[in-house]
Length: 536
Image (cartoon, rainbow, N blue to C red; front, side):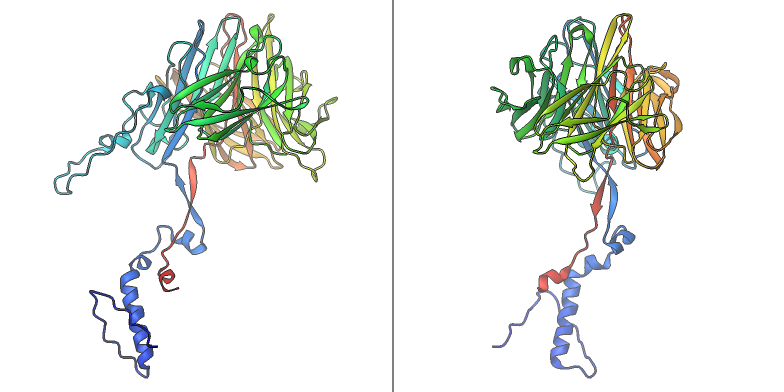
């Protein structure tokens, strides 16, 4: 059967005379030229990064949008909550905005107006684009990259959670923090949290419903669709069957605080897995221990055989470790502390055993030996790794009054990480731990102040396995708060944390947050057009 001839409308076949060639060869060559005319334009244009394309790799591009969710603020009779935003400088993008809204008051982004014809369209600046304009109901909005801003949260016990969005030049490294001072004896202390993106899974350990503890889980649905959330509890005897902890529904733009004593009675040490079976949520765990202290318990890094907890203060009067092994295998763990000279094994606390599906708690006392450090938990036998989550409660006391903070397993900084709410005059301390076998160098930068001040930086060398603690350098002429950035310069991985001291009424109030990598860049794979797929 004669094969049909492919005819391409609108093109005249060129006159192709091939010396010594057959009629079939001439026809194939003609067809190839026609297809080349139709499909070959993209191939004639080199990729943006020819070096990357040649190797079949990818390029690094800055993120264009970052969204963070903060839990409901603590706004009881004596609670004062501050919300802070910061984007470090150095990005290549322009335009955009950085702003924070109450989730209940969110309004859909305005649709961009149709573009005017090129000949009549006005020459508008970046602010003319709705994507560059902060929402009209923003509670706090950044004025420019590199300068932080702070503002009060909504008043009242039913204040909602908040959502912060950074776009364009405000997206790379966009950091959001929430800080609360409570002077009431029930919940006394400084509570701070580094706000994080919505997700479907969060792990917490160190919760309790025993004694004077009043803990609660904050759930915030900042998405445009509803969410259904389950709370899974683990105790010292294994998973707990908890009535009322599954199937929690959150409408779009809603917040819910789940008081743990209403679900679980008199359980001292608990781990909690927050799972969104549909939708996505922001989640936080707040712990309040009467007049002994209160703080947000950070979500742990995902279960892993090795967990590093940075930010151990040297003047801690007590340290309480809570470890969970949520899988099907027991965990035999080696305990190490990072000091000024590297990792060492604390006498009397060499190992910890955690049964599968259970929680183990250990009082470590003054494990840091009056020096700042970090805690590392790793398999006693590297051939038998078991994923774990871990949190350490740290107490500081002074003149019979105390406050508490919780530190948890953290991921190291890959390139750069930032925190928004920092104070001068020695109130801010940075903890840097070189977690690997190599020494490291990082650059610590304090931004311009929210009201006045010029940025300042300091390079810090960290020996392998060691922890270096230093006061954050105050910006020159500081007025207000400042943003803090830790940037990798050379060497191995570094886990970082920041302690904020705000003593009030003789109470040594403090809070500690790890500094995560800001993931300000993403890897974009190269894709080249391949017309051959049309001929297969």
